[in-house]
Amino acid sequence: MNKFIKIAFSLIITGIILIGFATYLNNGNIPRFSANYDKKNYTVSINEIKDLDLNILDSDIILEENTSSDKIEIDYYTGIEREILITHTDKKLSIKENKNTFGVDIDFSIFSKKQEIKIKIPKSSSSIDVHSLNKIGNLIIKDLNIKHLTANSKIGNVYLTNVSTLDTEIKLSTGDLKINNFKSENNSLKIKTATGNIKLNNISGISNLNIDNNTGDIDLSSSTIKNINISNKLGNITLNNLPNESTDNINLETNTGDISLFNLTANNSISLKSSTGNILAELNDNESNFTNNSNKKKTLFTSSSTGTVTVKFLNK
Image (cartoon, rainbow, N blue to C red; front, side):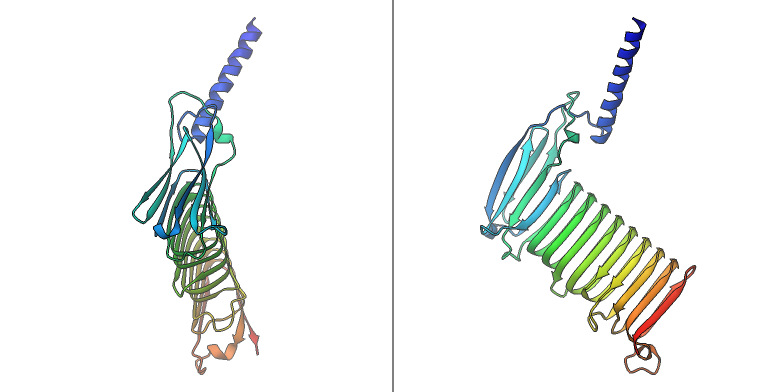
């Protein structure tokens, strides 16, 4: 009998531990055992919308081109436990995700497949502003023209592919950022991240690129950007294959990490600073262009407290 009591007691303790762990993962709320979601669709004419505002708790957000209609179409799942509210006021379309809790009812749906909100927008529309706040989940934007883009993600990755904007500001607390085939009309791209890697490829039309990162590697390639300013606390910075005469100024700084430049140059100035790390610059330029007697009047500054500095000029 004592043996069965011990087994029962062990099972009870295990159950309490599992419920406690599930509650911790569920932001302190005791979850429910089941979650029933209904798939729904919302449609509105693109001519009625100038501002798209997203406030999402833990679903993935996908914004993509609507190739079959001139309307904005939204596919989403909603239910008692997690409700999607869509409101249309004047020219503003708001999508908000609310999470409901019901006391001691237990729901382990937190372990189920992650929900997603898919928003299809006609690519011909270039006058819409997008503001996205995502607490837990990925943000994916592809094949779209957007006027102003503001993205703020707490935990999750951000992916931009084949996107055109006037200006963009992205903030990430924890997550990677990948941008491929991105175009801006001579404006700015501002990126601020706490923890995560940043990979940018084929960025064009940018007047000012400003990146402020705490922890993670930064990789920029095959892009035409006038002014590049990158600051990194912990991580490597790599730039490669920037077309000649496409960049005026390059300013890179990292506290702990290497700085590497390949097959590029700048019209005016290059500044490379690393407190702890190596610097390697293979410049597609003549060394004479950086001398005091040069008509080009280019400047090159490198500094590393505890690391090697190597500069190679590929043009003789």
